[in-house]
Length: 583
Image (cartoon, rainbow, N blue to C red; front, side):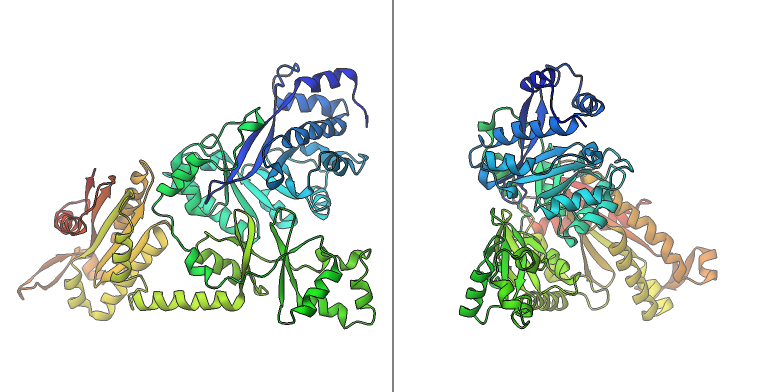
């Protein structure tokens, strides 16, 4: 491998420049990081960045070329106001991993040269391009992680081995590709995929960046789904002027403030947060021992890096394992002993943003049977610790509220929950839907209450299993149900179609609850409300739907009147649905 660059390549490097694009906290609009992007490749004589890197790879100078690029990027990074409080995402060419004889220590030298902490650096690896068999990527990733560098996988979901990388290496960050985010507010398939990817990442302690966000609707949808950070043209296009990078993007803050769906849940968990003192990962073990002796009731000590980002927890039992061994105390006080560095005594611990849904925190805790709690962050920085006892208390409170308000038959939320939901949609675009089973009384009288309850349970299960997760689903009582969903911009069509599919599915599935004779006949014979015997069609369900796309004050009483009136129309229509819009 060639280790030096010719003057021709040095001249080309002088023509290249680095642009930065910000990455923001999706809850606050505060900057978390910038990505370094190569620019002016055409001036250097290349059609694209890819053709440039192909050239240096073929000439065997990829590693020295990349080290020089790191130097350029690191130096320019230091010109960003407040750079020591944010991260720099630096893209690595996958083919670097094939090089066997590169020299170690170059990145460390550059960091020392520009007074940058390694906590400020995140190496970004794209899974868009397949890595050859000559390269053991997990070994390389482990090398960077052992060196305490943050690792991100770019273009997640469109490459060759994304989930395999999650399993084998567990990166710190994944960036969901723009393909999955374009139009996500109206595409339920994309929404489901991104939600599942995000939920899986959260369980592994991985942060998720929604990359390529271009519209307000995409931003708010990604926030609803649970992504941690956003990047894209909506915030700022890549800029060559480092001074244009802001600590906080007020236009994004305004969008977040205007989102009335945001829940102020801080007060729900603030009461339970233990503001335990955090220790820097570089703290000497002797100092930790002193703190434990002075605070014998302390059992958990959060560990953070230089940016106050949580790295894990130190449990007193881990320290005691050394204290009670014949040579443990001397090891703990020996700062030159690798074995006793806090990094090696530290236990991994799940983290969640203080703005996360309570359900996310509970799920993160529940999925790890060995978990002793969850570290809570705000703007990626440590805030406090939620102990297992605190989380169990929150779980019990949530269960009590749910049990008190749910319908005893279907276990769906009841009328109190419906009223609370309606009170919170004053400014949202939303769809309200009232479901009513047709000919239910006749079926109930003819087949008995037990079979009637089975039909109601069938419809409740259809709602739970077939409507997307963002739908609010409730049981008013008897054979009446209510669902609602908030949507962005023109996303109502997909949700209305989902409601239509519910109508069709119930009409098909409910046939299994009839005798063969009634099915062949296509109706049942029963008495009506006036005790007259007549024919009743097989069970179906009617839907009365209102699409609301206005921010004017809503009169819920009038809305209920419209829903009730439309229900009668829907029952007499072949489609079994009546839709109106409030504009």
